[in-house]
Image (tube, rainbow, N blue to C red):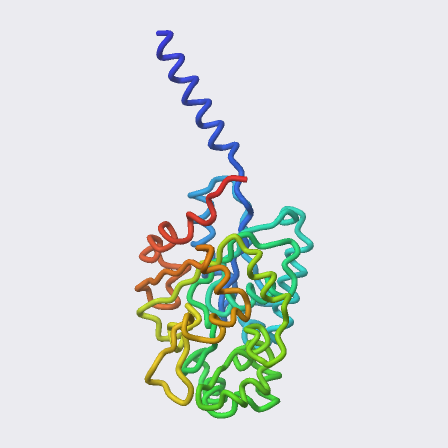
Length: 293
């Protein structure tokens, strides 16, 4: 009898210990043409795996419309304002971005990072840019992206134009891009703060999908991109000046084992919202969220 009582007490103690474990808060951010609804399943996965974890399912502006028409810099600014106003995030958090949300999240890290991001997890984002339509699946916007993305009015109007990178017009991209060329430190004058803040991360985890037909090229999720003046060859990150000259600190992260890559075989839109994609969360994302405080 005493042994049974002892076992029950041990089990109760173990349950209490598990419930007492604290994990860093997590902020997740959706992609373009949606609100935060598709991220709800991801939030559920996190809460089931890490009970009592504080998870913020971020929405910028009004979601769907502002994800397309709000300037990327303004989206980053709103992200920064929301996390700064949340006392539960004051000591830092882990961040997951999906699709366009990966760039907004990285923009926050490089331009603000107060409170600081510990692990930054990028799911299938256009980290080196986007060059392919249909992208937003709104015909007239996709037509603009395919014809005049570097017109001043287009840069001022569409978030996606601000990270549109035409391998046949790289000089024009560097000249007029209102977001990505700066964020990736691609211009002649570099911002050393960007490198400092990226290298402050514990880990930068990034993915692309072999079945992705939305992010083009799909290897952009790993900072790969088309060679100049062609769409027939991809230059991997490690062979680009972005890496060799360490423009934002990716080589530094890699050399200390903190630049982590994985691939999936889910179609783009399914990543945060389909149970078939859960194994990629479990195997490649959850380990970076589950370090106790």
